[in-house]
Image 1 (spheres, one colour):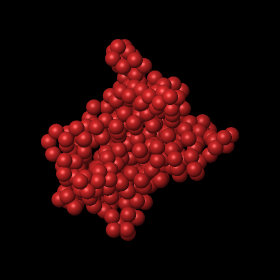
Image 2 (spheres, helix red, strand yellow; image 1 turned 180 degrees about the vertical axis):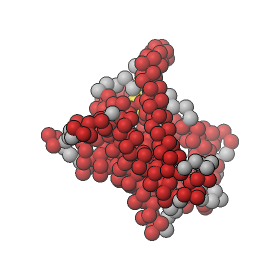
Image 3 (spheres, one colour; image 1 turned 135 degrees about the vertical axis):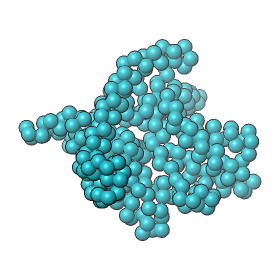
Image 4 (tube, helix red, strand yellow; image 1 turned 90 degrees about the vertical axis):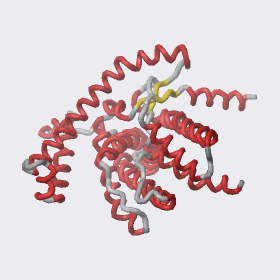
Length: 325
């Protein structure tokens, strides 16, 4: 009886996470529909099975991430609703194994910078210091003729610089919207949720958590990018597709993973875990390319780790089971 009550409590705890990210479930639905169809499902069964598996991911992932989110935010007011959570938990696991522990754990948020580098404590200046060299180095590799054509005749170095500044401005606007979301929309949501799902916790998109640990976001972005570059050159040696790093994925998913790594294993955990995370989020899409090729979708893949995991679940587990019957 005690076990039944405990299980019932955990199930009720799981369903109290209400996911508010709207666009990403569309990618999950696409994966479950395509892979369900190739697994032999049709009609209503295809829809119901896909909806059930997608719902499990949407509800379970915020619940699994909540213990770490609680450390970051200091409360249970909000949860993480982003279909890259398996990657974040992977980094947390690596940080747990190889990171700092106990009294030795030092958060990247409390790093002491020399006086002439104190300006880097401003989140947006830190992003600028990272993005400007990244854009300029990239445009130098692309070449002057290509970059000048892309910029419409503008000086290619200045074009790269302005694109980097535009990225920083976009991050500023994004985080300003996050503050609005936390200050206005979340309380309104909780007022509605109290009538529908008492004690519900809204699961929000990953940028909501950037203000809680801004230095970890920058560190996570850098280390994840390093990991994706390593994977880009390493995976083809094993016969897998070469996956080019995506800067948006590296920034948003890598930054959030950096928060997880820092919360669990401190600075060392965030660094080692971030590189491992970059490799991991490149490996899964590379594996998916092989499966897509066999289905007729040549050189196609996906990025969000949870949606890729759902596709691999269909391909490696559900489809073989269905073929038996």
